[in-house]
Image (cartoon, rainbow, N blue to C red; front, side):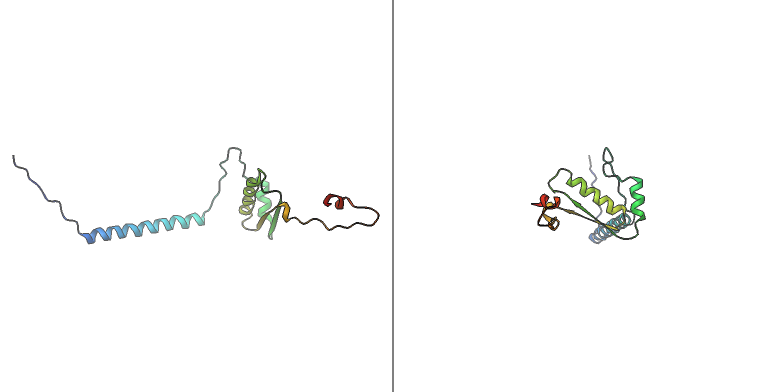
Length: 131
């Protein structure tokens, strides 16, 4: 029996190099195009079970009707169990207001007490609360 062996064709290194270069350029442009489209058509969905982070239509209409900037300040202790939820809700407000709102979470240590004003005869309830 005679075996016929055929030699594989030699693929030129230059053709392989150009092929890889063209593929890399195409991948770069594809990733750039997907990124550009993603930034132009940004969308958020609330896929939580109970729509925890979805804003009501009334809230969205109110946030769209705001003319100027709004600053939201929330005061509570950061180690409470709802701090993450509040932070996420404030982020949703900022997104729905299209950048017209800013938010800040302040802790108890950042809150300065009301100035003490009391007469010599009686103490106000505010003074008793901060004493």
